[in-house]
Image 1 (cartoon, chains in turn red, yellow):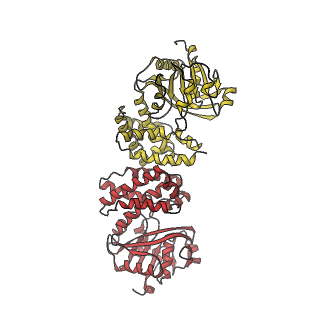
Image 2 (cartoon, rainbow over the protein chains, first blue to last red; image 1 turned 90 degrees about the vertical axis):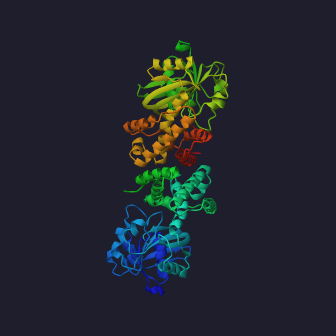
Image 3 (cartoon, each protein chain N blue to C red; image 1 turned 90 degrees about the horizontal axis):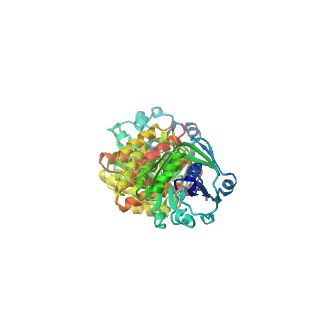
Length: 313
Length: 313
């Protein structure tokens, strides 16, 4: 498999994350196909145009299909880069394309998103991945990659497999900063430490960017309270995020140029939020472990009702 | 003083509450004057038109002045019916019209709003009052009174003075349901039990009426969590609200016809919220007593930043 040209990848989700990383893996030489739904026509006829801080590029999938059952090959990797939403049943969505030896990569946000897939495909390796990237789909087949781009990958629930190393190597061969992480669940908690406060608060503060949130002492205090709860739950879950990451996150956020979170962009475009992946699952883990998370529960309830009224039916 | 015609009242604030009750006290026979600012021209030339479930009426103050210093008489009562906002210094506003024997009636929302006035006028009686009313000013000198109307009055910090009894008697003489309350601070906490959750949540839920809030299980649970915190703080403050009022409030709110809170109306009209009177003071009492109020602190932080960006500068 060391020759990247032999690597077959099937990509689910050609939004910002899927297109950006799928396109880079294709550039690395892999044979990348894509399952598209709403954007099938545009992607199958013109491919995907990516405006990127890494330099603009164009991604033409080897084949574009409407469902996994139409993909006739046996993929080495399935990469799931859809939003993590209750209405998307990932196991059901990918089932016709999973073969013996297929590694399933969940390149998605949130915490505890792997069990539903891992429970269904017990013989397949699950690779859990995080993209630290600021990018958005501006139209079907059109991606705008504005900043960052690091990827962290690990075998679920822990470890670094050969397939993880291969993915990291492929990304690095096209200058994507990629890291293998032996405790990917802990890495998810660390990412949640930022996502749990700032994504929801950006919406609940009436559309605030990071700078507006940080400049309000009460909102900043609230962000810290939410992060303290995330630390407690991560510890109960056995993947403790160090307390010092709270201050580091605050300092890093203060240094960022003012930035609109992805949840705020979703809100403004009337798209559903990843509430369950980012907050709901954390609350469920907290409750199983009898950890009190009142700040998180408050923003969860408010986001839920905002989401229902905001999403176009 | 039993002859109501001898009772001199100076009213600060001719919004919905001030106009409605000032007008009724005038109807009872009292000599009611008003201090007006923004609405001075309209009120001094045409008086105030009140569309009311009690029957429409018109209120012509005996005199309309622009400041307390222009009122040359010695009032038996000063009634403060402005919003309770940090930018309104009540003690400063009324100081030129307070004389020996003047009772100062604070007919305003919130908790712990009396000390700033009581501390300044140590020789004067402070009467604390609550209006349970659904009314709004629709324009200068125009009030729409849609529902309810009960008034509860008590001497601050406790007791029922002769002047409280007189006010109650005057209100009752014009069929306003009025009650004297010997522990008015407890009555304020009981009112806060409803105001603390439902006013803020109606705004934070993106403009939800009572029915929309109650029909969302998470928001309803959040309202209950906020009420439980109010109960704890009221107990620490020495004016315990009975736990059973939580369930009663929930049941009563379920029975109401869908209702937009006053804070939501303020939000929609870009007027400032009474955040400090309703939440900020409760948080300060909680902190003095080392009571944890995470749900209240969360909605306080969110409302604060929404308020800053919402109010027209």
